Length: 114
Length: 114
Figure 1 (cartoon, each protein chain N blue to C red):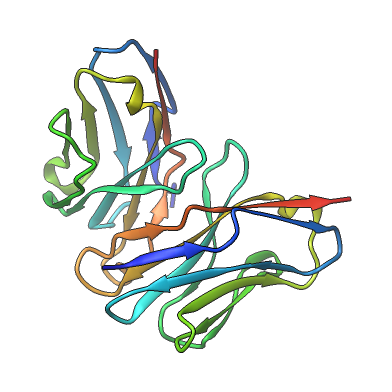
Figure 2: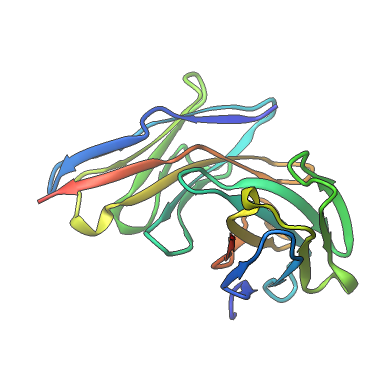
């Protein structure tokens, strides 16, 4: 069990650029979640996949954000035309079919928009 | 709608004295409740979880929490604080149906004084 992995761990980009993050969940975990954590705050839910289907999106996920989970395996989160307010830690979590309430978190990708 | 309130943003204790971090929740359904710890520049680590079994839950590193439905509380305790306990602590509520998404509190920063 290698745990949830996220790449890159850190990303610095200039305002207006596009960025893409990747999350590899634990094998056999059918549910995958993205959260965003800004400085001094708790993580906030962004979106949720069950297998390849994106079943819920938070109102925090503006139209500049898009997430995919092709084939129900890894997931990508893309931010287009980044803004300074997008600077945050982006966390991915996955959970197994038997205990869907038990999420396992990755180390996160820290995005800094300059 | 679910919500969670961490009643203290900062708590300071002396090493060797008890720790109490307070959490109240609101949920339309019977919830799952969790406590996570986050050390500086580290990922989220699960301390303990309540998922409808025993109301007194024991976790790692000597932490405990008690689910009190009548008080809608899930306070975290530890009999004797260690310097290594200094970190940010998050209380989390999740429904046991639907998306199982997590709703995080705003966090309590625990400081342990020598």
